[in-house]
Image 1: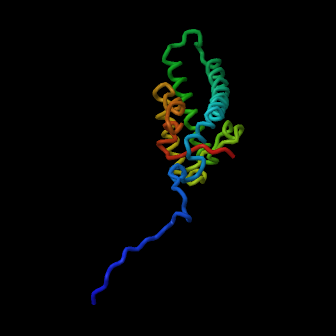
Image 2: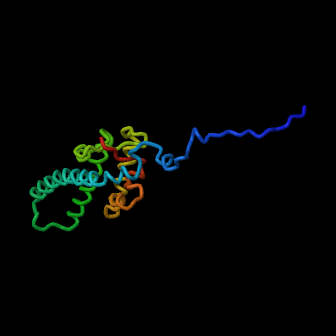
Image 3: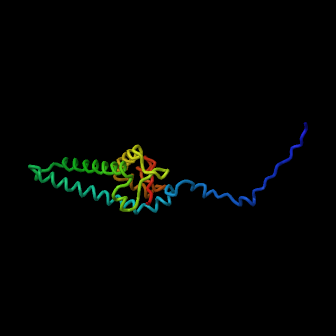
Length: 171
């Protein structure tokens, strides 16, 4: 059987006028886009200041109480202040970790109507919350560089966001 092959011509000109590649790049939830995250930087910073203030206020009460109970508080060694500094970082880390585990938002985030979510938009599961807590420690270590990174990163994410694969979302 000898058949002549004929070329098939399909015209989609009327059905699809142009391909929109920019729209394809923006596929996914809106809150994962860099522009969305950039718009949250001010609220994110205010939430961080609020949360740090809460922890600092509580910790100052602790320091005042312990210093007043020391028998020889006139002659304090510098190591005591170093221990207090390490204690503050530990308390701050525990504060953020527990709030991420329980509610995916801290009181500062709640005040700014923000919530930490995964890439699907769901609240954090325990594994993601622990990874984010680890990311907080990594972000704190080099003079808060991991948090300031959001201002220069093209995606406007902190190191904690990148380590845990999480985003902030406005409620």
